Length: 266
Ligand SMILES: N[C@@H](CCC[C@H](N)C(=O)O)C(=O)O
Figure 1 (cartoon, rainbow, N blue to C red):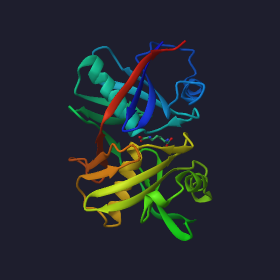
Figure 2 (cartoon, rainbow, N blue to C red):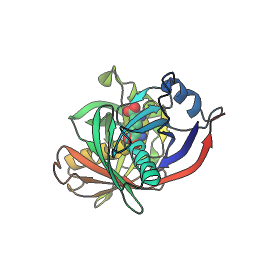
Figure 3 (cartoon, protein in one colour):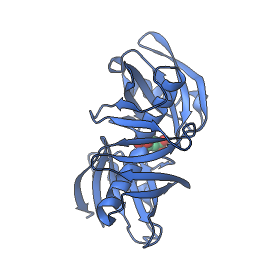
């Protein structure tokens, strides 16, 4: 079975495109096996993308985190699936369905854009002490669970240590959450570090996390409700802008997609 190793701004995936019916495949188990950094291909997640019919521009995209759990939304996985569809079929615009939710996608020369729904926002959902300072986290649902803390310097934070504690905090049980630390760089620019649930580690970028960061930074008056650049650990920033038709309910997130290699499973 052929696969692509591909990343969306540093968030890396094993991508299967139209893998046929494969009725017996336990994709969650395959995600655990293949995403393992030492014994598998190595990735943050496994993505299966299929056109709903041969003549359609609608794709069904399933995303599994490295631990085999299902991601209800993964902005970077959607961006990678859209890039591959453009590469294989030539479509520049398409729709992608993930966990029953429809997303729009546009593939430009140097960026792939997808939409993320913006749902409930809850200020001050939990507090923890970071480097001796009590720090509040706000939550924003962007298709999956995210909390965001605005801090002075994201580089001073032990993301994996604090992220793991917050991810399991009783106030976000039982689902847990992805954890984002965000610094305002001035103007319309943010810097982010994300601890991802399901990867159980810091990832180099997170699409739905970037949207959550912009939602919270906007709510706190740090940025205006227009395009925001979100710098990440990969050094490949994502751009987030409000959706033209329903700016309060959805956002576009765009940035680079890179195919690293193609392979065949042994
Ligand atoms: N990296 C993703 C988010 C992936 C989902 C997350 N780990 C979860 O299970 O909630 C993105 O780019 O949005």
